[in-house]
Image (cartoon, rainbow, N blue to C red; front, top):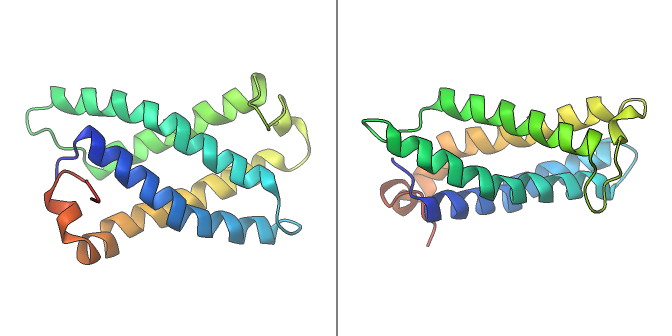
Length: 144
């Protein structure tokens, strides 16, 4: 499947606000009960991701087969995670104070949360999503 930009946005939105939200809720329960910070991080991962998808879509058009292999997804995930952690650490975001990761254990929690959300959404997209939403697979990643 070769995602189109609208398909990328729909897919990112769908998986982050279903699978990602469920994983975020469970992670927040594991760390001292529900905590808004995990949901705020998920929101910013989604928001910045919409912008990154424009870049990824452009890069994908440069490839002869216009494909975006799983290795590229892994690399993009690492880049997005580093980017958002640096923004939170050095600049801050509305609702997330600057230097948050200076507190004991908060960077570890971010890494655990980010990694779990990504793994669950990645494996969802590689398996169940393709089986349950065949339209998605054959229409450029569009959900509707």
